[in-house]
Length: 91
Image (cartoon, rainbow, N blue to C red):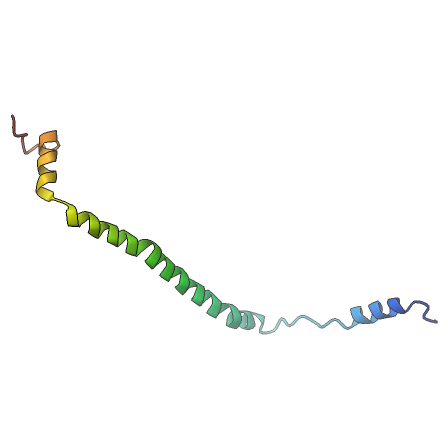
């Protein structure tokens, strides 16, 4: 059978030489690649949460309690009638 179209021959030959997929050891190969990436990304996420959420929250609590006066707050709540065991000053 004579070949009339050269492009058909190239396409026919290239489809016949496809490599078989490597299924044996595929999980191990993918884990060796993806496990360090996942570990690094988890460390980055943990550091981002620590310095983006936890540290500012701790600083906000520290700033609040530097100026917080417990006696003044107790007297305000006593005068408002919050406590059952402590009467307001005028009563």
